[in-house]
Length: 166
Image (cartoon, rainbow, N blue to C red; front, side):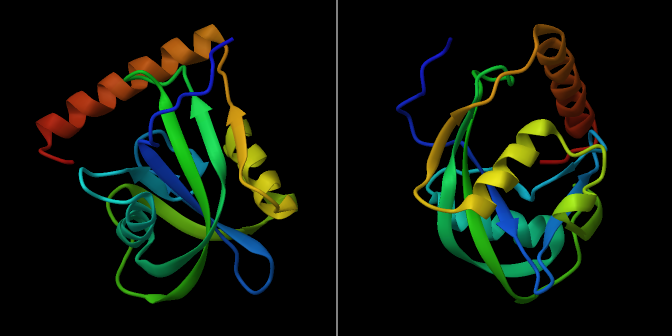
């Protein structure tokens, strides 16, 4: 079993609740999965700043970061794995429209999440509800899924280069 990395996180995600206890999810343009808004941390950027920027880019919402939910190590993802720092945030306004990375953005009750929400996202949501000290979890994929994800990431990267995107 892989050990938890000691390096800084390379991406972030944000859990946002509305006044009715619903969570904000985005339907990703690339894989058509519903997931938490988030993405990579740019050079010189703090994880908190990346969280604010990614939510703004993907949903058009302005947020503040309230607390760290945890660190999630996904070693089977391309590029040596992803160490994701997840935050709980609060919406403070709308600053624009959702970006090209999201084909839909919507609020969902926890007991009515779309079927395409990955299991690891459901784990993050449970951790956010429970609260407490930040957790540290290793989230593995079955071998066949890891290879499929690597193939999909490679195809997405090629498509984005051809379309001159991010």
